[in-house]
Image (cartoon, rainbow, N blue to C red):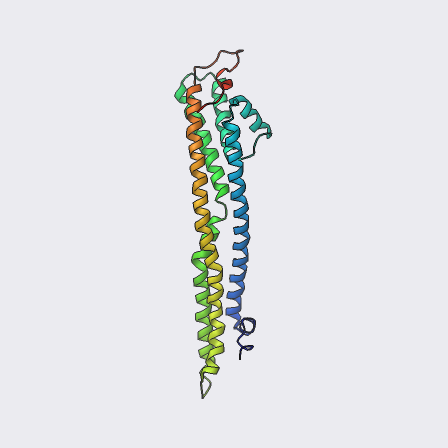
Length: 241
């Protein structure tokens, strides 16, 4: 009896529909686990890269030096660094166009940083919705397999004159395996989704704080446009909090 009701035996002897449901759930589970491992490594790398850029940013170097490193790729390659490069590039373009209004200079840089921030957040949040869908839908897919399996089991029992627990148990057990696989796929996905959502919120807050701090620095440097042929002294001022 133990051998006949093993998990492998139940899966191999389940109905075709239940086997298809199990195969879908196993494929979804493997995909979600690959996303989970990828997200763990990816978010860790994003945090490390942002921290490295923070150390470079507040190390007393000039805006021009940081921008040159970010543009050439010699500095820390981080989402925060790309946001800085987008804002600084727009700020310098506005200065070259002789824009004298400090508010216009700052608004252009902030819009560029916000656009870059949104692109970085889209990249960080990539495939997170798949984990949420797996966590919410997998139990119902498994339940569908269970219901179908129980219906198939009772349909087969209708032709029997004598029904005992021994004849009912295998069919019901086969059906319940689908629900178990659905929960096996859903639980890690839900836990990972909640954890990643908290981590992404922290990353978003860190980058938004950087945008505000860098905007304050640009506001202090948003002096009237420099006449042609003269160096951009504002962009060469050392950074400070």
